[in-house]
Length: 429
Image (cartoon, rainbow, N blue to C red; front, side, top):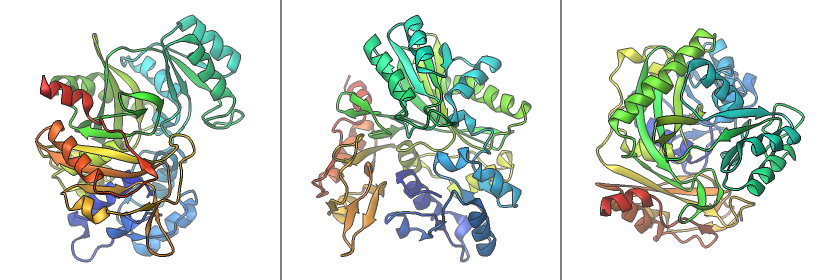
């Protein structure tokens, strides 16, 4: 379920699964032109739980994989499980880990999970008072879902105050409901390097999946406003095996246990945003789905059967199968976005050169495309393409990805030219 670059990567990998051997069918709802190369796209409205259940019954669906966060926060996984349909993804209560920043911070306080200090606020005046107590630098977060754009790292007070005013003016969602603008979290600024770590769980067993680093800022050198992500690479070598083990024992395991103890068992993928501080890893935020574009680079490296892994989570038997295996290579993806993004992007521009880009050995995932009346591929979103390549190092994967980018003819799209720059600098000494 879904229509973005993450879902294209999931469909591409699931199409290779042994679960489809013997005539099985992979459906995508609603999908996109890239996903249609691997799956039968259907026009299901994922907000219509009854229609989704009816489709699953009619087609005898053996596993539903929910790609984006909004249907999970809306309780789709609960509806499917209630109808006896195996589903990969947490229920509505557990999905509050992503659906409410305040919920997650409160859970951390109860479970003793290392994270930054915080204050929850429900009005502009309270928010302004809180940022003045914290002082700059400070982090301001819209409480609810904001497509990856609701976080401001304010290095000065005017920026912090402007971020509070934007949230309570409704920029990220309604202020009079449970939308992203109803509440904010004012949070201690954590100093260090940020990384992403993923784990799979069926609510009892937890297994590490992979690590990645993404690039949130729109401009080279990590400048400009936050976006949903302009590129990523995997693995994140800064997240050493020892640090991953610490994340598992001090952050992920107590999260899963606390949710289970409180009647909100978590099943699916846990996406941990972590800051590597001088005193150890600290939780920045949780997401309840595979990242985008982190999913694309992790699945390029995955050697295991993705379908078997996800079904084992859905059927509460993760302990019975082999943990995921990954290539030793590095994968790197470059996001090509519509001019104007993360503001209003230019749409409708023609995209040519896809075959030439993939002839380099790269994989181009569709994130926001549509097919024109003449069959041409057109841009139709903020983030439009994810150009993804493998290499023996970040430097090599970066060179391969940009070689593929340069084969594309898409004048209305732009990209950062420095994805992976920190690790490239480390590799060059």
